[in-house]
Structures are given as structure tokens and as C-alpha cells.
Image (cartoon, rainbow, N blue to C red):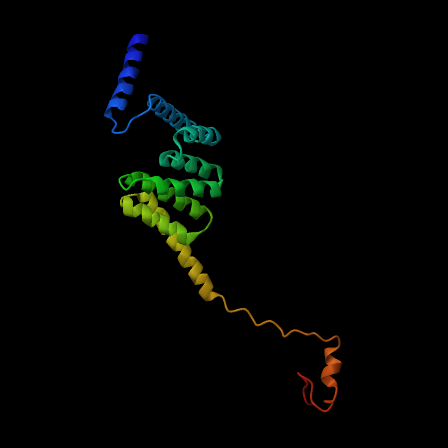
Length: 199
């Protein structure tokens, strides 16, 4: 059994080394295997609602593989579930920059999670843009459609509230004098006071 496993591992390494255009170091397939294992470990921790362990596993994998966009996406999603929104936004945006044009589903997922992040912060315009970007990539995403509808209703509500509110009254003029009434009465004793009525 051990010999069969060793043979399979040797064959995989040989295929990876022979199939690449560039010269590959002998340890590189092993490091990729470790990255895959850490990513799986992090995803499993996330599924059982242990996002702290998941983040730790994703960050360990990133130490080996650098800024892999899939690892950044997974880390951002775990950070989002913990409410660490600033870090989550940074990770999700970084993952979007690293994803290729062909990774449409991954881009859609990253935009959707950014939309949820903005929704939780009541950043309606950015949330709408993120959900629209999701729908451009995956037009049949019903969750994104539903969330976009909620965002558009919130934006409409805000516009209605702004239109209904009367403008605030102008502030009273500043008074810099200690005795404003005595200054007003000097030299004008015959003039009627403001608000005075004739009998």
C-alpha cells in the first residue's frame, strides 16, 4: 500500500514537472499540495462555523502561495462572517484584482460578497454597483436580484425622506454685544419696539 501511494505521488510530481513550460523546482508541486490542503482545512473550518480557524488556515496557505486570489476570496468571506468589514473589503477587492477574465463565477461571488458587506454598512450606492456586477457575470443569480431590489428600495426611501423634509430655519443673527437692548434704544427712543402694538 505504501509503495502504491509513493508511486502515485511520484507520478503526479513527474507529470507536473514534465508538463510545464518553465523549469519547475522539485519542491513546488509539494508546496502546491500543502496550499491545497490548507485551503481545504480552512473551508472545512468555515463550514462548521469556526471562521477564526479558517482565517488562520487561509493565511498559512497565503504564506506559501502568495496572494492567490482564491485564498484572498476565502479569507475575505471568513472575515466578513466575523464582522471584520475593513479587512474583508480589502481581501475581497484584492481577490478581484487577481482573478482572470475566465474566472467568471469567482468574480461574481466576490462582487456578491462585497455587495453584502456594503449592504451591512448601509452604503447603498456601492452595494447596488456590486450586485449589478454580480448579475452581469451570472444573470440568473436570484440572491443578487433580491438583494439589489432591497438596495433600490432603500435608495428610494432615502430620496423620499430628503424631499419631504422642509429646509431648516436660518440661524439667528449672532449677538456680540453684552447689552443689545440698551444699544438698540440709544438715540431711537421714539421708534416703536419690534412687536409693539398700538393701544
